[in-house]
Structure formats: structure tokens, C-alpha cells
Amino acid sequence: MKINGKDQTAIWVKNKTIYFIDQRKLPFAYELYTAKTVDDIAYAIKDMVVRGAPAIGAAAAYGMALGCKTPEKTATILRSTRPTAHDLFYAVQYMLNHLKNGKDPFTVAETFVQDIIDRCRRIGDHGNTLIKDGMRILTHCNAGALATVDYGTALAPFRAAHAQGKNIFIYADETRPRLQGLLTAWELHQEGIPHVLIVDNAAGYFMQLGQIDMVITGADRIAANGDSANKIGTYEKAVLAKKHHIPFYVAAPISTFDKSLATGKEIIIEERSPLEITHPFKSQLMPEWVSVKNPAFDITPSELVTGYITETGVIKKLL
Amino acid sequence: MKINGKDQTAIWVKNKTIYFIDQRKLPFAYELYTAKTVDDIAYAIKDMVVRGAPAIGAAAAYGMALGCKTPEKTATILRSTRPTAHDLFYAVQYMLNHLKNGKDPFTVAETFVQDIIDRCRRIGDHGNTLIKDGMRILTHCNAGALATVDYGTALAPFRAAHAQGKNIFIYADETRPRLQGLLTAWELHQEGIPHVLIVDNAAGYFMQLGQIDMVITGADRIAANGDSANKIGTYEKAVLAKKHHIPFYVAAPISTFDKSLATGKEIIIEERSPLEITHPFKSQLMPEWVSVKNPAFDITPSELVTGYITETGVIKKLL
Image (cartoon, rainbow over all chains, first blue to last red; front, side, top):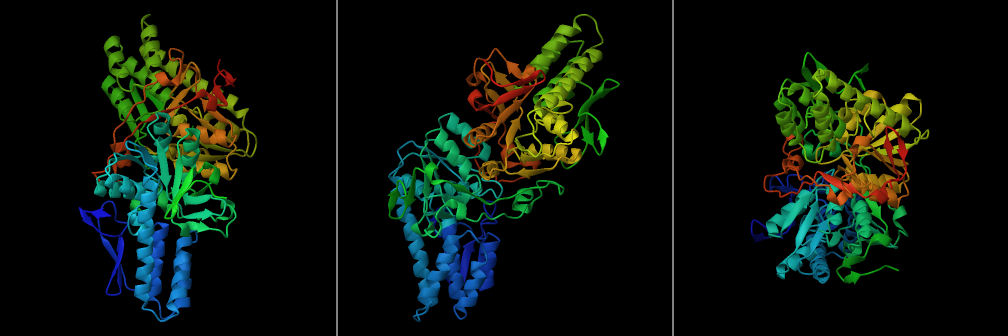
């Protein structure tokens, strides 16, 4: 990803310290968060210093490297941080498997993270084959480089299309409550890709006007039948896309698929703090007496999904 | 409406001064805005001290009373404040017609406003016939007493059902960008009606769970074929309701119907200031460089509407 014109990644290691672009500070300020212990990593995952399934996986891999002397204890701490993040469990298990044979734990983690980055680059290349010159594409939440160490999942095809000289225009849903659409806008702004941020309520309006040609979102977890869990509101956009005959793609690495889940009904939806709604960026938007409910994810049934953009290619329909 | 346990209205007159509950201050503070001139009224409409089609109509009627010595000039000033508010034009014309025969202008305006209140009360009674005990109902924006001087349009049936002892539960969309859902939550809180506020992204999720039995929204303008203009996001909820076989009702006084418009396509959609998105309640939520688009309304096609709750009864389908 480009930041201030230079290529860099969202997470990196130097001298056994893990550096994160602090996503709680973006898009207002570009600051780094440093982690030297497993608890620092757990905090980063819980408090959303780092967010997005693959990036959380990368953080967990580095966390396992930091806690390599007590791998089972470290695994327990890291697994408890986010219940819907399948990549987190995958990363922890990968590290447990590979730490056994005496390899340097940071080298193992680095290999794991490089693999994530490479998969995202390939998601971008495959997704780019779906994008025609002039297309206007809606995305929800931030499935960008910030969420995946580099390139992104949903945003990777935009980067690839833009790099190839295609003219594209991105509508970024602001994505209440946490407004991750601002992270998407920040990445697109840094990359020089034309875009606009809209409130979540306006996506249907622009579809009605015929100004959206495609939707690409990420996914936190995909069941065996193709039902996918993603940020709250994704389901609404999928229903609207279907209504308007707009192709709706889910971009995610193969590791997001969880064949142990027959359908999306088995995915547990996390309900998060009311403060996310009432106090975005920790500033008070609503009075104390307001009663809210804050489901963090929803399930998009496979029948609303045109295809899955993965590192191995575009899968039009799952079995 | 109840405020701190007492019955009152959202707009009233005393000694040729018009008092408004200042909706820019709600729900954080209960403050009054006073208008003594036509310009004060125009400012109140433009800056959303008062909002909602019928309340704007009431404000305009009082504005015509204040500017009764130069009725045509006053009419021009008031008509220029909000292009989609049909009730504004209706109120101005009503006053022009009735000021001619020498009646006291404040008495004429008062009669007009009492008629609005009475129509809302009847909308509540008719809407209540659709509500069964135990129903969970979604509403979008604030079509409440604040928007209509008293009772509300979409909220009037909730008040009537609650007064009759029916158990109901209301989901209030927060309604970005201006978060008018907070006004709805404030009214329901004052009235003691069980409710919760959700982000606009979550309505589809609760429909998927089978936790929403009905949707009632207001309307700013309704075309001859039943297409209705309402707050941005209403269309998304209507599409979702249809998908889930949930009845979707539009509550509005007959004056909202504009037979001069064949379909919703003829309704001009106002694009409002980007600051509404980036600076809700005038506090900065987004950095300066963020590029946004802010359409204020959308059109819900009549085929998505189960019926129209009016002061003369529930109209199931327009011709």
C-alpha cells in the first residue's frame, strides 16, 4: 500500500518488536502502536488497533512468536480475543504446528505473514479480471491493506485495476457504527483512486440511479454453503444489489472458508459495546439515556453472492 | 406529546412570538427557539430548528401570519427555504387564500395548525388498527410529534397503541447523517414506549432474525402513483421489508400527496451539505480531506408500500 507516496505494509517486525499502524487513530492521525508482549498483541486485537480477519491472523502469528516459550498459554490468550475471527484460530494453529520443529519463531511468523500478503495480491489480480474500464463499485467496511497487512481483499482488485490504468470510481459506505469506511477512504485517497464516501443509507439510492455497477466486500468467515459473515450492513447491501441485478462479490482468502460450518446459521454473531454507537472515536454523539443494540456482523446468504474472489481464482458458486 | 411527564406541543404561539422546541439541541438539551420575524421563521426551517413536513407547514403558516403585511414577499421568502417540503407550499398557499378576507392572521394560522394536530391524532387512530399486541415495529428518521407539532405521523400509531395498553417494541434507525433517530428515541423515551436505537446497517439483521413485524415511516411527498419521497435510507428499508414479507406502511396526512407528480421520478432530490456527514451536531467526525455525497431523500416506489396511513383511513393501494 502507498502511504504518503511510499510503499509500506500495515504491520511489520523489527528487533522482536511488532509495529502496527494504529487504526484507532486513523484517518485523523497516522501513528504506530508497538507490541513487545503477548498481552500487547491481545490488546491490539481486542481494542481494534488492528482489525480485519487476515491482519488479525498476522497479529496472532507474531503474538505466538512473542509467546513462543509458553505456546499453549499464548494460544489460549490470543484465541479469547475475537470469537468470529476464523483467521485468528487458523494463525494460532499454524504457529503451534510449525513451532514444534525448532525453527526461529519470528521466521515462521514472517513466512506466514508474507503468505497472507501474497494471497491478497493474487485476490487483486483475479478480482481485476471482473472489473471493466469505467466501472463504479460499492464497498462496505474496510477490507483493505489495513485489514490484511497489504493490498487488502475487497480493495485489492481496485488497486490492481488502478495500477493497470483502468478508470474506476469507488463508493465507500461509511459503515456505522465504527466508520471503517473512513479507513477505506483513507487508503483510496493515499492510492489516488477516485472515490466518495456515503452514509450507509445512501447505497440503495445510488443503485436506483444506476450509478453502481458492482459490489465487492470482504468476509470474516464463510460457511461450507457460501453464507458469509461480514460487517453489519453487508446483508442489506447484498439484498439491494440482488434487487438491482448488480453483481455482488465476496473477496476473501481461502482460509476464511470454514467447512466445519454447514451454513451461516452456525456462525455466532458478536454483540459489541453500545459505546461504539453512542461514542464513535470516543467522542460523545448520543446522550447517556439512549438504549442501543449493536450486533457487529450479519450473515449474507450464498444465494445473494455472485461469486467469491480468492487467491486461487473467482469461484462463481460453491457446491 | 409528553415532555417530562407533561402534555405539550412542539410549536406554539404566545403574544405574536412563535416558540419552537429547538431540534438542533435535542436530544442533548431541551431548549426553545423564539421567532418574532419572517426571517426568524425562514432560518428555523433552513437550519432545521424545525423539521418534518407538517411541522414545517405549521412554521410557514405562522411565518405568513408574522409577515401578513407583505404576503407575497413573505410567501417568496418561505417557499425558498426547502424545495422538497410540499407541506410548506401548501401552508403558504392556504394562508394566502385565507388572509384575503380580513381575518386575524394568527387565528387563521392557529386553525391551520390545530387541523394538522387533529389529522395526526386520526393517523394514530387508523394506524393503531394495524398494530397487534406484542408487535415489534421498525421506524426510520423522526416522523414524530417534533416533526408534526403533536402526535407525529409514523409515531402517532405507536402513541395510540401504547395508550390503549398494547405491548409494542420499537426499533428506531439512527438515520445517518443527521441522526434523527435520536429524536424518535427521545420521544419514545419521554412517552415510556419500549424501544431501542440501532444503526441503519442493522435493520436487515433484525429482519433476518424475525424480530421485526412491521415498518412504519413518514413521507415528505407522495406522487400520484404512490411513490414516496422520504429521508435517505427509507428505500433500503422498504426493499428489505419486501424481501422479508414484512408489511411496510407510509404514514402521512393527505396533504403530502401531490397529484401534480405522476411518479416519484418527478420528485427533485435535495443534495445537502457534506458537513451533515462529516460534522454531525457540528462536532468533527471525519477529517477535512474526506470527499462525500449527501443526498437527503430517496424515493420508495409504490410497489414496495403495503399501505398509506392517512387521517381518513388506511389506503391499501393507490389507483
